[in-house]
Length: 140
Image (cartoon, rainbow, N blue to C red; front, side):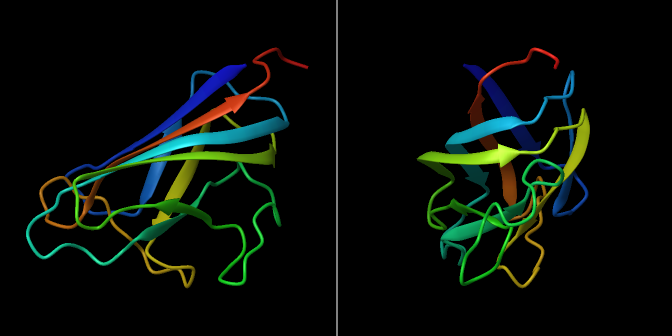
């Protein structure tokens, strides 16, 4: 098995869209989400999101995620009252060919409400790490 780590980091500019650059593309195959780690800048009073939603650009094809709350949004657990939330998963997806560069968007709900990253603001995301396992880096 091979590991794909997607790291989404805040910058000084508030945005919910983060560019991901990989060293090489990954061929079509099954990806298994194993873990997420979410960091936020927290202060007394807490935030209000126990789940955040990600659109993973070119990774997950149409209808890989079906939900009564919205399709193609990957729900990620987050405790709004702490700085760091770590969650374990075992969710497999048939991934499209993953290009070297793509964007991940972060939302507070499935209605498309942006949830911004920003380095120095309370209750803003600072970092999200996603860890996927997949079979092989061999080019087909």
